[in-house]
Length: 328
Image (tube, rainbow, N blue to C red; front, side):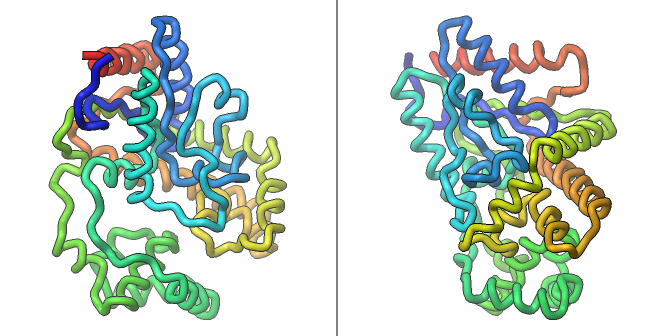
């Protein structure tokens, strides 16, 4: 087996919105590759799967699945610890090199597209996060409400506020934090060091297989089915157990993950069960929409529709051809 000097040359990635079938496709790809005498190792590109103990609400691959196919990037942080897109990019280079040294084939799988951008392009040099400033913003949110802080952001940085949903508290907090620390808006700092026009532009070849259903209702049905399955499997008990741990609180990035934030509100009796389910489903649909927006800005991707009968064969054929390139 021979590889290009750059670790990411001819890398294969399977991406798509939440509940689009990325994991099942990657397992089928691993099975078919094994029949050809090849071994695939999967690299998770999911900002929630990095956290230990967050299993049901993240649809994390089971222990059995991970025994059958080696995974990287899962259960590498406790929920109170931080993990960034920049760290992911560094970790991937290490994982890819180790996988290839074993004579195996790395495949990146996930939907956290900021991580993909960091891997392909790097990130704009924004100031590091400050726990003290972040805590002060959280206290303001508790006192005045996130709607008030969002209005503040609209006055301070209308360009950033325009691209953020009013309910995206994590990114609203980050934008306000940057302004508090630097006196400059996030939008002005980004303009000083803009991203390339093509978000996945890079100096090496790669194949980005993007699972994009033409029928949005198909994806919404999948999201709903998965959400109710998570509830049946004990998602609320999982969140209750997490909240019993001393270091875990609702303002952590991990606890702002889709589903977890809504579950915490329900368990804290601030919303009803019906409101929790409605909010959880709405947040999941919004996540899928944001992921599709990221993907459609990536011209190098090859799209396949996971709702079609020929989806699996078409996607597997594309993936196996790319794996063949890794041997040349």
